[in-house]
Amino acid sequence: MSQSFIRGNRNLIKAMNRSLILNAIRREGQLSRTQLVGYSGLSTGAVSQITTDLLNNNWLLETGESEFTGGRRQTFLRLNPRAGYAVGVKLMEDRVVCAITDMEARIIHHEDRQIQSNTSQDAIAQVTKAIDDAIRASGISREKMLGVGIGVAGVVDPHTGSVLYSPYSGWRSLPLATLLEDQIKLPIYVENDVNTLTLSEYLFGAGRFHADFVVFTVGRGIGMGMMLSGQLYQGLGGGAGEIGHIIVNMDKEHQHGAGAGTLEANAADHAVIDATFNGDASGKRLDDVLERANTGDESAIKALADSGHYLGVGLATLINLLHPPLIIISGEGLIAGDYRLKPMMASMQTYVFDGLAEGVEIVIEPTDDQTWVRGAASLVIGKVFESPLVASKASA
Image 1: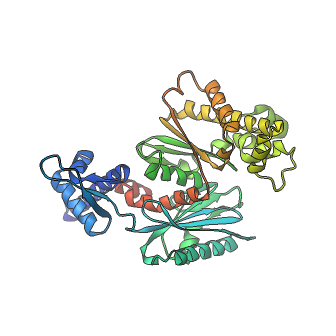
Image 2: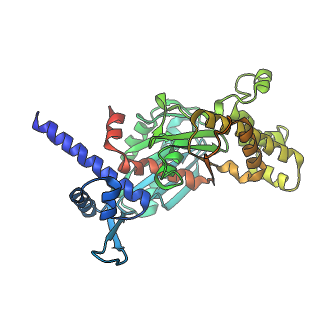
Image 3: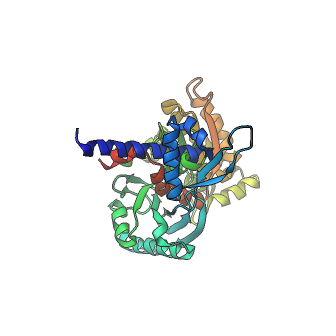
């Protein structure tokens, strides 16, 4: 057996153990070395060596001692949120939202600007400027930036960072990561925007104690992200999770053609707005529907209830297929509250297979633009916590 093979195995094991320690502290917030031995299953010596190395390299901080209960006091360790920084970008066809976050995805600086472009080259130039401006305005050295995470609607190849198809911008097979890396000179990670939200929930949100859960988003579109066995499930070529395109209304599909019967066509915000304003929805937003519903407008209330009904069909389908222990329902569309959520839950109970909904935890978490960019930044932060085995498979 060659010495290089032995060294390679030792380095891999060391990296795996380092990931184990970092993830335990991330989930729990802070832990003593003794607690880390219990959480990780590693020896006291191994934990001591790894934590000393992480402290010396500024990834961990000592945060005080435990209460005295006899014997030696335990010093707690926590992540150093300023060990590095990430840029998060939520990219839309006419807007770019950009934020600088610390290692706990807390936003330090945030920008929102309109972009006007007729070509992908124009858009990339404006996104590049937005990122450069945000880094400069944050006052943080560019050398401390670990990378840029970008969330975009549509199908994204997570291995190459290419946008295979984006429904709002019309991009097809656009090598977005490569094009931006040439301009920004930082690592670029591109992912479907709902997947970025899912990763953020796994690292810092309601999913951080779960190896398996689903994020279901309601807004301009209907999306889904899946964390399975502690890994983001992306499917073949990044196309997994397009739950918005399942058929939930066959009558409409037959009457109006392909796509008219999908969950997104019947339940997304645009469907609610169109139904409320009889197709005259120019310039209207979900806020306008909600305002009408609050005054007792029956068309607005019915439009929201119909949307909720179809969302419930989608949720029942999700549970019937995956039966996850946790579903996090998120998105801007949740501002409609019970007008949408009560019919959704009632419909879900109607269509879910007998008994499968029992024990499934459902968490409602409305989002805003800053939530989306924290998710995008988590693409970068997640690389710090990623198992080296996962990283090696991704690069293979």
